Image 1 (cartoon, rainbow, N blue to C red):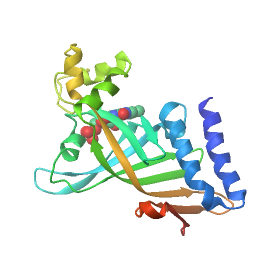
Image 2 (image 1 turned 180 degrees about the vertical axis):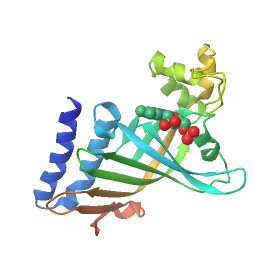
Image 3 (image 1 turned 120 degrees about the vertical axis):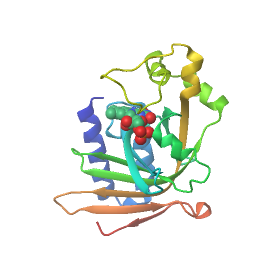
Image 4 (image 1 turned 90 degrees about the vertical axis):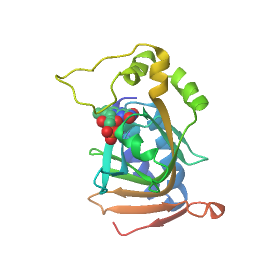
Length: 216
Ligand SMILES: Cc1cc2nc3c(=O)[nH]c(=O)nc-3n(C[C@H](O)[C@H](O)[C@H](O)COP(=O)(O)O)c2cc1C
């Protein structure tokens, strides 16, 4: 499917939900089925998300920090979304800090669909055995990204990729999978027929997701 087809599918999928008998009943499974497609199809608007975390500066100030990441996996049962990253990156300094009690936030948006999906999540970093399995399944060109000698964000004298340590074990040591667990979803759709907004709350797992319309 092309990028245009995926956008069309996303927008028309939501529109037909709205026309159905009980949109609140079906929207949650629709969101997770689209996230599943987003995690495996580069052309899907939700293949790239914006991931925000809270970081502490040397001066002790807390700032939100956002960056684009690839959605690598989604689990509809566990309500988890994965991304892959370099353990040495700035985001990981805060996510690995044991005193950090903040969560993360995902944002998916595409201009063409006018659908915004925002999700609050907690996270865990997979252990070395789990990381190895995902690393081995990563295509070689992507493994190379984790093999820079200097950490991401380090200054360079000129625009370049920096030096690489081509040993696979070095790249593996820098690679990690972050598994985020979604606790709340906020979906907004802008439309000339009237904007729509709804929330999905997972805070009480025994009761299942609580879906409700919200003022847009
Ligand atoms: C299209 C695109 C996809 C990206 N995917 C990832 C990714 O999957 N994981 C990642 O760690 N960084 C990814 N990046 C780079 C991040 O946006 C960011 O620059 C980098 O992770 C450093 O972020 P930090 O300094 O906040 O840790 C991607 C950037 C772009 C432009």
